[in-house]
Image (cartoon, rainbow, N blue to C red; front, side):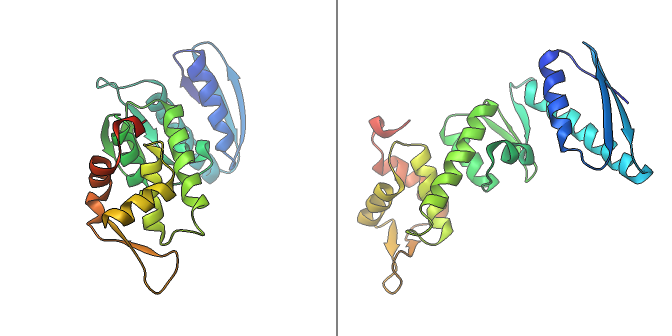
Length: 205
């Protein structure tokens, strides 16, 4: 099996991603313009490996080379593996948009954006960390997620954001259960409304 590559960066990246393939034994030799692969295993496993290799090749091209709109095609699973964390794709979309990056199409498997790879990985890691760190103090998760998004796109911590949201009536505290909150406004409008009314210019990143 021959894989064509355009440069050393692509060759190194592709070879590193081959570590994901576990169903067969891989033997490779690399040249400046191509990689030769030999697969050893059962016919069924070889077929599975070839399919995954083609997916890695497509993923590599999408990560390294933008399209005509200047957008990279990122595979969600790859992003989560690199970040060592997972978040909802919709939250990632919102983060990128509020950070000023372009978003074209996104599904549960892919997202297209002009944001650099490392930026996306850092955003995923930061948001996931904030959601986990506030787990004991703020419930339910949907409230933690929205507060964490605001914290990532501003220099405020989730608790300060929660305090402002409570004071303004955008979030209400449960009267029976401590540390449980709910939205007093439509959740789809919460982020935009909070940013417009409760974030000063010098508090935005």
